[in-house]
Amino acid sequence: MSNSEEIILPGSSVIVNNPSSIYNGYKGFVQRITERKAAVLFEGGNWDKLLTIPLNELDLI
Image 1 (tube, rainbow, N blue to C red):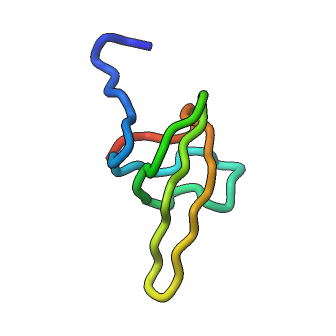
Image 2: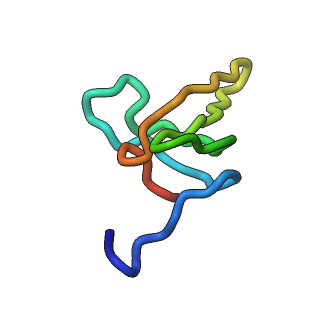
């Protein structure tokens, strides 16, 4: 982890960065963080989805 790297906290806007995930490129909001995973809320028009995603697969927007 570099000094210039930002920390992901609840309320942060993030994007999924995992080419092997069907959610790659999706943007969402961090709801909570437990251990090394984040619960991320994705909203898409008429649907909402809450997923648990490892922190190393998320980038801040």
